[in-house]
Image 1: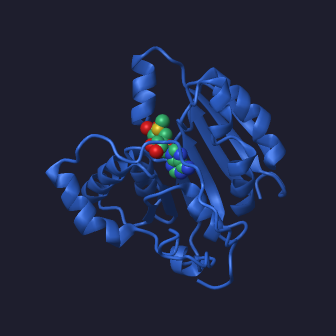
Image 2 (image 1 turned 30 degrees about the horizontal axis):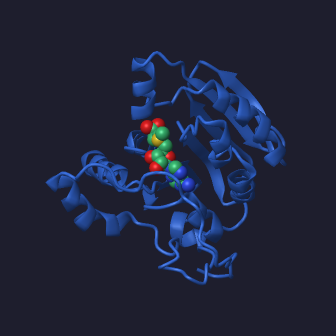
Length: 238
Ligand SMILES: C[S@@+](CC[C@H](N)C(=O)[O-])C[C@H]1O[C@@H](n2cnc3c(N)ncnc32)[C@H](O)[C@@H]1O
């Protein structure tokens, strides 16, 4: 860690679930034995109360750095880590059951090119230098269907301005959702935060792996929608 980051002392509101049903014995073992090996140090407030900026060289060793926000059970995160061994991916997820599921998948797949922050992605935003992230994934973000809760969605300035700051100009930002009103808000709010829309529609990316939430959406008759943005500020293809 080097320079001083934003040291705002306030605690943020987090409205999602942190604990779910009781963990299986094997999941407790994964948390006890494996979390310490993949947990990215210097991200949580407890670890880094001064909010010092992370040393990217220590995190990625010069390799491209990707981010998955809210990885759920971790299937997409592990799939991407396995498909792209020359990339380092950070996954953020506050839901401890999801973290335990991911750790089990990491054991099975044997991937080593990922870090995990078992908490709010905004903790990571605090301590990343500008333009650190080369690709970001937001798969099936919490929908917050009631109109009075739309401001809790990820696709609002409080999250997007920070995401834009940490993304390299030209970097890709992918969003998958099954909620038409989430598509609407994504199209309205992501471009003004500093992104250009590259593509949207019902066709997933070539390297997509369908997630638990997508499978649930399909079972319940909802239709996936995929949106691809590019962080503005660089030539296409740069
Ligand atoms: C609807 S689930 C989707 C999970 C997974 N991406 C999938 O497609 O199966 C949304 C996830 O985002 C996580 N989440 C919500 N707010 C978050 C935040 N501020 N930082 C990181 N993850 C967050 C939730 O805990 C939840 O697991």
